[in-house]
Length: 235
Image (tube, rainbow, N blue to C red):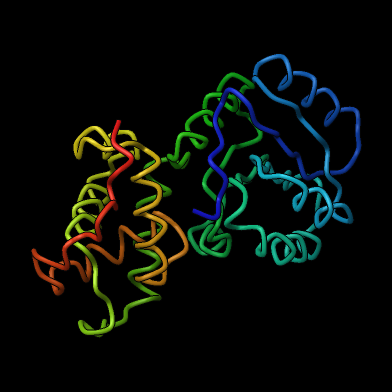
């Protein structure tokens, strides 16, 4: 996968914000609770800092007005496959607003405690999303209303393993759950998901679930055999 394999034992946490006392206090608290460095990144440093090495990126929405937020979003898109992204200090975002951040894997509200924030970070680094269930449901409904499209059965070919993983994904299973069910490593699951996302042209897990619910039955229960060595990375 393009996105680096990042673990909670060693990673860089990048906080995109503006310098302030409250931001400094937040960084100090985070450094006490996580196994990694916390680095402040201002908008004009994004290209240099995000190119340097992969990590988890928190985008502090409190630090930017609407126009600056939109510019920031566009600046981050080229790094979508390199980092794990989450929104910090997010107000009650609508499904449309969340959908405009297709590479975001987590959302934290202003009132969330540091303990909650750190736990969510750990989950995202293990391949999970950190979104309330009602937000996930709202996103799927949004895609149903705005992204209905028929598929060309000949254009999209999924292997048996890729179809298995998609079916597990629809149930809400995490990467760890899928790995346990299929007796493969989480790395293997992530690699398959990366390939599936490219094939079905989606940007994130929610879009993949929506696509699978609407289209997986059209492909059928069987597909191509997986290429030799596809699941060599067994646990």
